Image 1: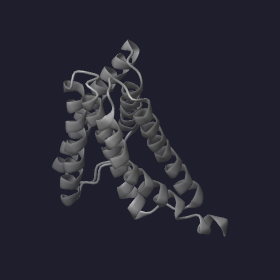
Image 2: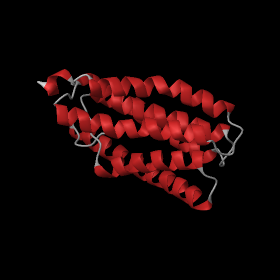
Image 3: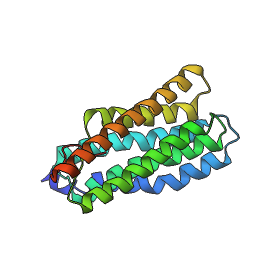
Image 4: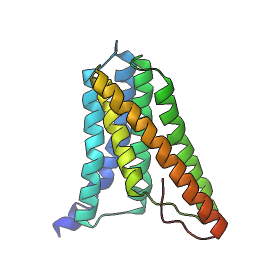
Length: 185
């Protein structure tokens, strides 16, 4: 009974995450840089709710089509807003954030294109690790001006490119074979 009454909670957290993104962008735009503790806190809280809403959805049996679409979209938008913030803070060379932003936009577009062709991609473990590393590194760059954080960020760029190449290979094989692939970006 309680599970049914709380089934709305994971989707509500996803909506709250989406609603927090303009606030994060404003805080980043107003920050004087090269870091912003308030923006890092918002970024961290929004990122943590991603983990929480997934756990709740599975625990409450509240997985939904809305959640399957909106949750990864909220993740990608959070990362995009964070990367825009890294550029606004003038914290790093903008090439790294630009590469990651391009990858995020490309993956969303490619996913939609592949889906129209009957290929539904799924996230593999490398993709999950890459997304998590990118989120942690982006939050770290917003919070700290340290060399080890910069190294972590550039490692996330390298891993993101590697997983993009892997997903591209998987998608090409699935298209050639005319079947549904087992990985999704």
